[in-house]
Length: 248
Length: 268
Image (tube, rainbow over all chains, first blue to last red; front, side, top):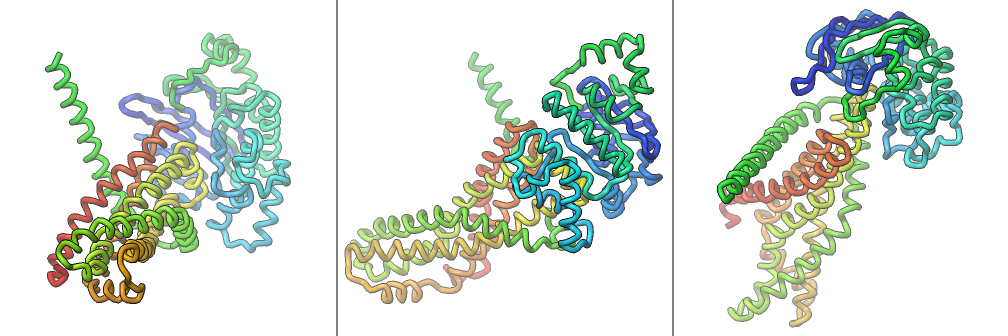
């Protein structure tokens, strides 16, 4: 499903990704761990071509993402969903308009079909009552849920999550993690999740890679990584190493 | 100490000048991209209409009040001068020409720039830093087309309409200033204005506001679309867009006036 080979990306001379290679099978849920500034979000953005890598190859469903023209890229993006860190809901649109936005512009659906899809995803995230609210009227957890609903409304095969539980209280974070798992099973999606939240990772996925200084330094089942004697991993999982000033 | 200060001043000035020319180059490339994308489907006509109504309604009261005051004040200023030369009968014509040719278009454009360019800069800047523009791109929608092209088209077409409105309001202001000191009917006043103002005055005067409207949309969109560094970047996009748009309006006004006089020498 996803294959990344020797990906390099740097910003103003600072190397963020230094030859990263990743392979994610169909239906697999993979977590990307790493300190802030190690390029986890950059990896996701290169994958969906929101950023152009300096070099390397990216394949999604056998398609070379870097060589696609705009039309083919948009076709591919219809099969991909992206949950942004801050949910990235369109402030000027209501929840309904946010959800309808990708449908109106990419599919020829009748209003009835669109309503059905909107109601179905809102039901999936248990926020049917929020349909006519504006994003500013929603709490952080609700925004994440609506962001999730908007990502899955096109029924993507591949979901990318950028810190899905950041900024939420532990209870809401756990609810969002459980919801993500439920939706993954319901929609049979492959997913890549960037997170610092170990509990979220344990709920959503069973396989993880650990990025550090632009390289993958560990990969394997989450339980193995957590119980590893490796000093970096022990520090990471015990202290939740975070460098808030870094780029990721 | 003094040498160090001068050195510092020169370095800062060079940096600002570099930034200014970088912005101009960026605006040129952004403009090229606009003309490439404006003819490609989908045309998003509904979005253009929505922005035209929004921007027009937002600016209508302030440009109306300004137009009225400008018309009133300029007439009050000119009246004693005209009276001194015994040319009071020419007052409506001279005020009409100055409003139609220059004051109406430029004042409207400058106020429009202050109100709209900063608004577009802040709105798009905020969308950029909160990843809404990225989200749009991921949804398979071209954000440049949906957010930028529609706004530039809206500002380009709404400003001439606002200008005509301002000219009309300014003439009303001017008429009120006239009737405060002498007897004159509205019909006579308008007749004198129409008699003096030719198409050669009105057409170039209003036409150049298409360019001013384009500048307002372009500058606000460019700075907002490329905003960086969080909320600080949004603030900078908003304020810088007013400064650059106003400056470009005045520069282009100078160029367009020269061009008009060259193309239609009769208007002199």
